[in-house]
Image 1 (cartoon, rainbow over the protein chains, first blue to last red):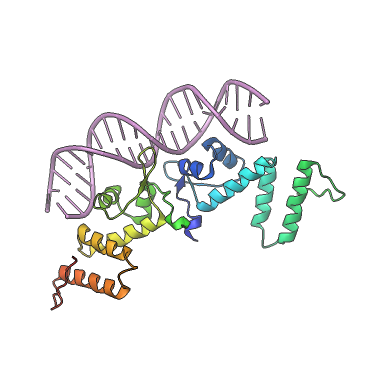
Image 2 (cartoon, rainbow over the protein chains, first blue to last red; image 1 turned 90 degrees about the vertical axis):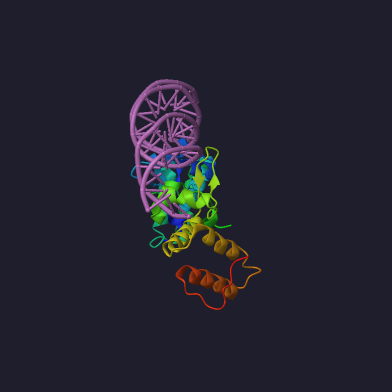
Length: 111
Length: 111
DNA sequence: CGTGTAAGGAATTCTGACACG
DNA sequence: CGTGTAAGGAATTCTGACACG
């Protein structure tokens, strides 16, 4: 595990790095989109990977996706070993189409 | 500049990562061995590189070197462009010999 | 010289809640 | 649903100093 994945950054710094408010960052955790560690004193600790993920989350929120949809997408990405990249792309495209009302005959939903 | 050099870690975490006390970490800064950034609130922020450097400093202190000697060594390392690695090694060896009383005819000192 | 500690204050983070929409 | 904010408390960090050696 590289430095990129070490959870050593507190929420104030993450807020600065991402441009997100601390409220937003905590909310995305509440919605299971992000999983920081905790110190003995209960302080949330994030990694650089978490920072990158938060930026991606923010972009998707801007695109109109809801947190539970983003969670589904991120969870399926974790299963990259079982799901092909092509299939993943398809799922995301499908989700985006739902959001933007660009329905087609392939109305697949996440199970 | 990679993640390794981003100053995003507070002193409490650095203390845990290095095993050094916060007192020691602040003292090494006072002695110019380390140069953390500061947030608006005056909090010291360190990078993973700083953490590595602190471990090296701790080892040298254990070897009996004084902070000003360590500073000299670290400063010369920064000038890697002008000083060859071989010459650097020579200087460090010389400093160690002084410390351990293993004097030889080449009693070079840092200028 | 290098490090521990108690001291008082300032900055940071936490949680639960009310608000708006 | 996603985010802002005021509220009170707890944890973190800061500085300057005294101590020991």
